[in-house]
Image (tube, rainbow, N blue to C red; front, side, top):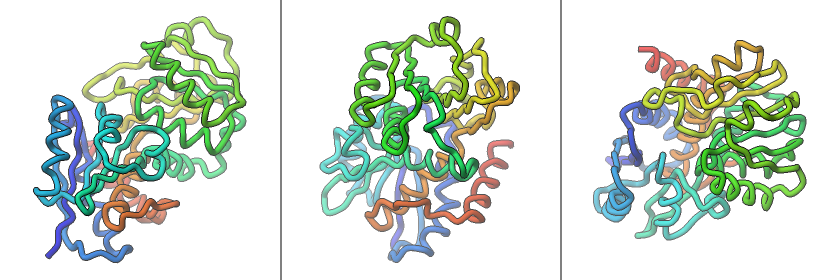
Length: 301
């Protein structure tokens, strides 16, 4: 009986619920796509250094792995180590999903599409063109999300906040190349919180590990939220981060990272099962709700 064997590669994986998530998804997706895979195995592969990732990828096919997800801080490295990039990974130099096929490492990125699917599940009429887009963080996750959003809509303006201004400027240049038009600013987080005017309709996306259960905090502490704002935190554990709690207290729309996690994982499994990049979410509304409820219960225990 053939096994779909996959793994999650990254640092600080103790908070991860990816193993449980993929086990929930496999019977749903295996029944939808023609495949000889009848069982599923998913490991957490902690990697302290970049060399550990390179060694794992090198030996994975001989250990019968079909593919892997890549998380912080190795997404750019995963793209670099791959033999071929497909889909969005070809443009963003970053990958959260790899597949082993015919002695070749093929990488893709499902993060951006995962976020889009999760937004539309909760807010079907969402239209970014009315919003001023703000990224908190400028790493691989921000780049994937920026590509997904800025190639679909043109926001009123774009602001990138990061501790490293150099890294923020690199993301700004990337965004301008994808969607020239809106004004672009690069700022420190403190300057944004205290020294800027407050336009309405800000879509603020938190793309750093801060707020995660292993890294508690809120980079936007002291920020004046408004009821027209939309706060998205890519973190899912805890479900309600301090940033989202503060935003919701002022009436802003909020979205955590659980939906993105589910959607990107489903897209990853389709890639492993078929080698194809799905254009739409492979999950029906009832299937999604069933998986989401299971994970919420798991995170609440």
